[in-house]
Image (cartoon, rainbow, N blue to C red; front, side, top):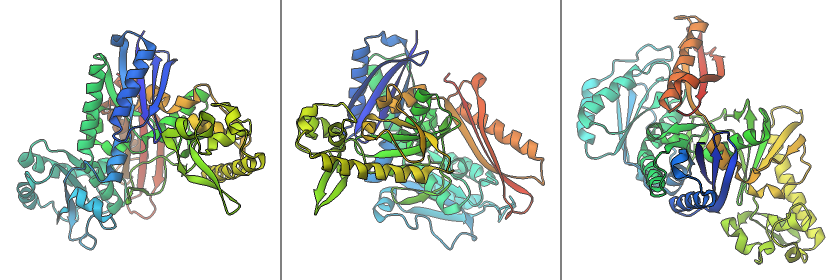
Length: 516
């Protein structure tokens, strides 16, 4: 029997699960998330292994969903000094890179910016030839001054030739420095794609240290046979090497792990998911078994980007949310006792009224000691819970794309605070093992690859364009660590672009397969 370990880092708890090859849960643990993130991961790993007591040589895979990259951007720490090379002179001189970035984030990344001739029109024609001589000079100038490079060319999702050639020239001078190419990261929209590419380049070292420290922890625990994967934000996995090239794809992987875990536990292909943690709740959508993606630009750390992100609404409501009354009005959060809930909530002998205490007082949950919340006035508890429920109802309504009632899957340790009736929902599913859906989502995930390109149908047929995009997505999944024989196309979307000449179409394809 082979086993796999899934670990997911949440804002309050770090969860770890052990599953067998039949995807049956063998053991699970929750430990408080630590400030440095890593020590919480190591503790969760150690505890789940000790509890399961199985032969560690039989653990073949280890998956990690982590907030390291998100935290690095939020805290402006451990980011690489990055050279930004925009190919598009003179067409793009009007707006400099990093416009609208928070000042402290610009300082953390470094303002090494270069604009050179080159780039393409929206139909693939060259604006001007790539200035290779200037690129060679820039490479010599930045050598030893930066740790990573971001290359962004105008309309590179249409034609990536200038970015690929720029990478070759830079590597001749700089050697094996990490180089992020924008056509591999974002879609149309120069500034948002540039922002995502610069963030990706700045996160390379964070990804490397995270992966290496996880591998070291596995080795220390005797897991010498385990292949390591990191979770990406579409609910699938990627190999360590792939994660080091695209660390930005780990951002928001926690909520998507929960959505995948919810789909797995509930056996539902299409549903709403409410993941309630200790501090916050995330509402997402399972669409054909995968998290629905956001169709709008998303801000990360104050920076507007256009790379793929899950479609989520986050609420400042969790099991540890503090409930109080001010001037006769009930206040729900946004403060939370977080991972200290087992010390501070009334049901555990603490002195703070939390959302969990309200749920226990109203008989909605059996956690801790019901005796310790009997002094909360029933009327107060009912008003507080009505306010919590109102927040949930409103957020659910925002996530729905049709007025038809849909099933709602409740996961996360804090989901005990949710009532048995939610507006716009025809069924509430509280699956077994709901408390560790996030780590389960990491453990059972497949490996995926995705492509988002623009094709001119004046040069080829629609069928040829679709086949090319599908093959590219399959190749990406294999590069990310999928078994080539198991890869299938799971999602295809083609959008005619009426505003572009040449009968242009944007094609997005996702392919997914099993672990090698």
